[in-house]
Length: 452
Image (cartoon, rainbow, N blue to C red; front, side, top):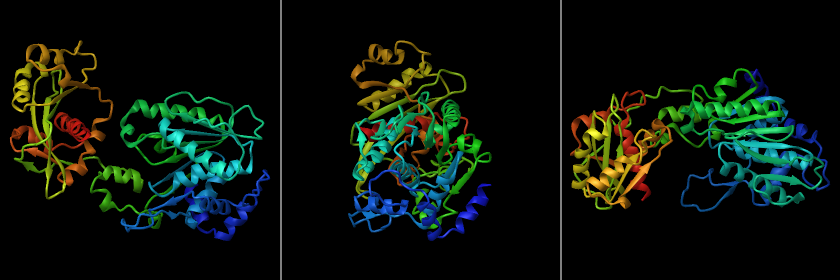
């Protein structure tokens, strides 16, 4: 079904599109353009939809007016024509949100002050930003609005008790009456794709939205093999706009992306495919004998025993004259033991390194009263101000994979005094590895060191 629609759209011409748009007559006496293209050009004239993406000259500090390509107007026509639930999947940085979310809402509301829309996003911040953009454009066009709430928009002339545009998050129940359009825009990011709980929350929200809307648009990319897109793509109309479909519309290249990202991430975000996540991103990490010159931090990834390992990462930064940037050097140590069994060895490393700050991963209730922290203070003379607990809820694989760019550019290096066993655990790590304690400790350390 989706492939047939895509083939038919490719046959359309710019004239066909103008005829299609002119068939939708505005109902407000605002003297606004009668077609989406005309409205877009008017918004361009008001300073909206500008971009620097079309120039490769980084020294040019100016913004260019962005006008959608003819192919992108076909996306817009396809989206307007859909009823019920439908998906628009496509590569990042190709204008999907600008055209299919923000502009679609502006267009529909300039046509009908009774149109009711709900926007669902993964974070409150993103939802508020989208509504702010829509509100600002409507105001610039002269559309009369009630109030200036962050999470709703109401047009003067709206006879409904419901707002014209409202925002809802994926973490709660969506509220309101029936909507003409519900847009679910990037409900999960890649780091959340590993979480069964978060994927279930999104699926539940979408299930509620199906019965609440005439049109339900879900827009975004894959985040997991079992995500929302994967579940619905073969059951509802689906438009695919991956880099292979529209190479002329995507400025990102695979080579450039892989300098800082993983192959799996590239596939999900740009090609619409799932590559096996088995990259050993630390296999070529550089060793260093340079001692950090800045503050020294330490992070302990605790193990309670069993098959888990306790891992310690100690490091700081120095200024690399060749890179002209800060480089973090980390000493890594790990033990096939619980943290309590090796506490004396941990303390010896901390004291020898003369640390400024020490962080340990939250115990999740298994050790009460911050036992590790109290031992360091009461038994070993550390200052409470030096100690902090990390309560990390971020998925480990995503957190660790974020280091790829730092490792590839040489901004994270391992001190040559790192024991060989620990170094091997780091260098051979992939998302399929049994032990992730060493790279996890390194990831937490890098977050603290580069943050402070």
